[in-house]
Length: 45
Image 1 (tube, rainbow, N blue to C red):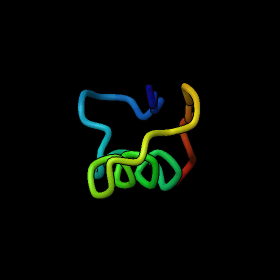
Image 2 (cartoon, rainbow, N blue to C red):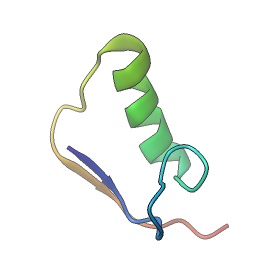
Image 3 (tube, helix red, strand yellow):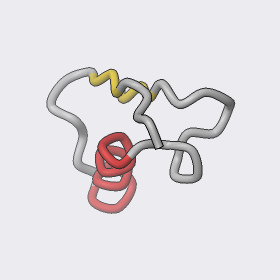
Image 4 (cartoon, helix red, strand yellow):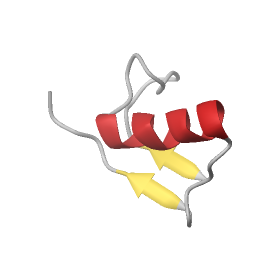
């Protein structure tokens, strides 16, 4: 499971963060799962 602390209801890709976006894109595009559950903290913009 990938959890992104981004606020709001939509996290990918409009309000996500680069690290979380990479993990989700790898799964959607290539079927590659994160090695373990991941929590990505909010990033300042």
